[in-house]
Image (spheres, rainbow, N blue to C red):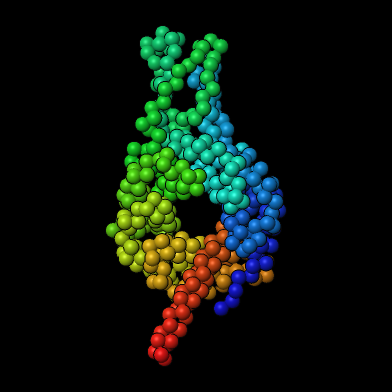
Length: 379
C-alpha cells in the first residue's frame, strides 16, 4: 500500500488558490466559500494550515456576509429598505445560502476566530431569513387607499428594519413569528424556498458550533429528518426520496448532534452503507453507481456514527483512495486516472486519514489485548 503524498497535496491546494483567473475558477466563482472550506480543511488535516495568511482569508469571508437587501413596495410611493444581515454568500456579490453560511462558520472555527462573528445575527438569519413569513404593513395612507392594512408575504424577513418615508411617515411592521421555521420542521436553503434534508443538518451544525442550538425547534427538525427515512434504512432528500449516501451523512449527522440517533435502524442502515463498497475497495453513493472518493468520507463517517464501521474493508478503501492521487502534481480525483480537484482532494484526505486512524487505533487495542491474553496464558 502506498501513502499520502502530503507535500504534493499541499502544493496543489496552494496553487489552486493562486489561479483565480483560470476558467475553472471563473465558472466556480459562486462556490468559492465551499472551496475555501475544502482547501483549508485539507491543509489543516495535513498540518499545514499556516501556509496561508489567516487574516487575509478572514477579511474575505467577512466581505461575503450579507448586510442588507431592498423590498420595493410600490415605485410611486418609494421603497422600504430592510436588513436581513447574517447569512454568507459563496463569494463577494453573490446571494447568501445555508451551504455557504456553514462553510464560513467552519472556516472561522478552523482559525479559532468565531469571535469576529455576531453569533446571534447569524443564528437569526438561519432561523428567520430562510423561512416564509407574512408581514402586515399598517399606516393611515394604506388604510385609506386599500380600506385596511396591506399584507405582503415574502420568503425572507428582516432582522433589523430601517423604516420611514417622506410621504408615508412611519410604517409599522408586524412579523408573524409563527413562521420562523417551516411548519414541518424543514429548512429552506435560501430565500427562494428549496427544501432538502441537507438543510436541517446545515442549520443544526452551524447553530451547534455557535452554541445557539437552543434557538431552533430541534424536535420539529428531528421529526422532519425522521420522515425522510426509507424502508431500506437510508434517508432521501425529502420524504419518499431515494436513499443516498450524501443525504444519509447529513441526516445521521444532524441526529447525532441532537442526540436523536434512536431514530436510526443501525443494523439496517449499516448494511445498506456497507453494500456501497465495490470490488475496487471504493464506495458509491447508491446501488449500481461507480465508486467515488467523496463517499469515502460520507459513508465511512456515517458508519462510525452508528458504530458499524467494522463492516467494511478499510484496507481496500484506503488503497482505492491512494490510487486516485496525482503523485506528481498533487490532488485527488473521484476515480483513478481522472482529473483532480479540491473537492475530492478534501474528501480523499479526510476519508483516508479517518480510515488510517481507525486501523491504527484498533491495531493498538488488538495488540494490547493479545499481549494481555498471552501474559495470562503464560502465567
